[in-house]
Structures are given as C-alpha cells and as structure tokens.
Length: 356
Image (cartoon, rainbow, N blue to C red; front, side, top):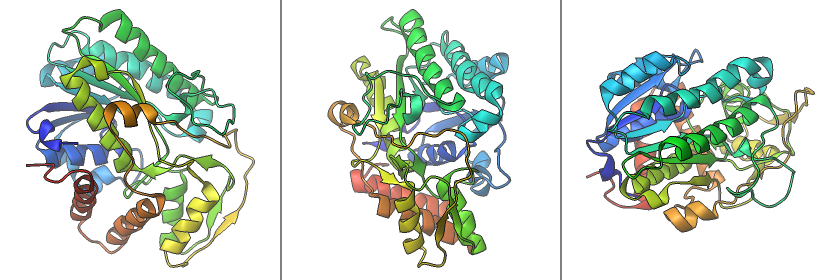
C-alpha cells in the first residue's frame, strides 16, 4: 500500500462527517489528497468530525445524499478523480424504527451518487461501501463469499443488498466503456475505533459505560461478528480504489474482514473490560429487541489473493487502540495527534515510507 498515490488526487467522499468518513478523511488529508466531503451534519452530539475540526482541513459540503440536484452540482464543480460512497443510515435498530428513511438514503442515495458521476469525465475510480450484512444469512459456519446470495434480513441490511444491486445495474448499463469509471463495492465487517459515538453499537456503548463507571449492558453476548479496527477496512478501500484506478481488471466486489472467525460480543466486551483494567464489568441483559443474526463470517480470499490485502491488527490490538484514543479524549488531549499517531502506526506496519 502506497499512500503517495493519493497526493494531489481529487477525492470525493460521501458520508465524510460519520465515523468511518472522519477516519478516511484524515488519512487522505495526511496523504496530501485534495479532499471534498458531502454529508449531513454529524448525527450525534459528539462527533469525531467536529472534535478533529476536519471542516478546516478539507472542503466540506453539508448536503443530503437524497438531493440529486445539489449532489450533481457539487461533483460537477469539484471534478473528482476518485469517489468513495459511505453515506448511509448505518444502524440496524434504527432501520426498524425508520425503514422508509433507511431505504431512501441507502438505495436512492446510491442511485443518486452513481447518476451524479455518470457524465463527469474526471471520475476514474468509484467505490460503493456496503456491509457484511448484505448476504442471505443462513447461520452457516463458513465465511460468505462475494458470489453468495444477497438478501439482508432487516431494513438496513436489505437496503444495502439493494445498494449492491443498484451498483451492479449501473456498472453494466452505463460504465462498461473503457473510458468510464471503474466501479467496485466493498463489504466489510463490524468496525471499531476511537471516535465512534453512535448509539446501539457495542464499543461506543462500552466506552460510554467506562466513562460513567457503569456496567456494560450486553444484549446478545453469544452472537459472533467479524470485528476489526476501522483502519483495516479503510486500508482495503484505498488499496482497491488505487488498483482499479490504474487497471480496470481489479474492479469487482470484495469482502474485508478479520483473519479469524470473529469473536462473540461477550468475548469482545471481556477483552474491553480487561484492557480497561477491570474498572467495569458487563452484564447479559437481553431487551427482546428486533431480529439480529447470531453468526456472521466473511471469506476475504478475493481481497487477499487479488488485491494482496491482509488484516494487520488483532482484536486485542484494536481494542487497545480504542481505549488509547478514549483516554486522550477524556483527558482533554490532542485528538488530531492521537488520530495521526494511530494512522501512522497502522500504515507503517504495512509499508515503510507510505507518505513521502
């Protein structure tokens, strides 16, 4: 992986004010890219985007992905070379509360971004980021492959399956010519990292409990998920958009997940409590909430064999990095500095001299 590739490149990110988008924006800023983001205001009172003051480090446009005219105008003005689509309603439980909004954002948002780049000649590489939950989950104990059936169960997962199908249709209908953008989708596992303040996600919930010195409430301790640090999948996304920018043969659908089967949520929070020096504990307290899959695993052979991508940080290391970031936050430290430190540590562990 060579982040020097992005120096001077015009990169457009939807959803840049979110958790993943903030980390991705910071990586690209450090690499010397010309970055433009398009998203709603952060949807939590606390946000990594605001805490890092990222709007002063990049071009930031506040807009709704459902607003095709505004999206088109911004893209036509910026003339990006690379587009990474992250904007989404990303929470399973929220999708049960607001299914129409979830489908509008996750399905029509994908239609809109693809329509917006369709006649913009500057775009060379496009990536739609979906989720590991796009697959028809049969609770099998082997990893789902990119060729397996798409059919998410809940409105969030299903809307992301639809987003994959929209991308497939646009790619085959409008982007087949050699001069058109190369199109891919990325399906990543459950991500964790510092700066995530979302509700109804286990690590942000655990951080809030730690900071309040309260027990962590765990709804589904025996459910298994492919947890990974957010930098793992972002590394995969950047590697993919770089490779397909240079050669169309790399465009396709790719899974990005951990090396192992993932961990149960109970084991994840046990590691978290241990890393937090056992200041708190977790308790099993199911709230009889809506359906969520019990077991989910990804087969990442394509990313490993074709892109030469591989996971780097174990779940232990990933959780340590979360707690390290949080310690700086609660103590009023320099959050840009700790974020840059962790980015540098991650990418230098992959390849030396990645920036200059």
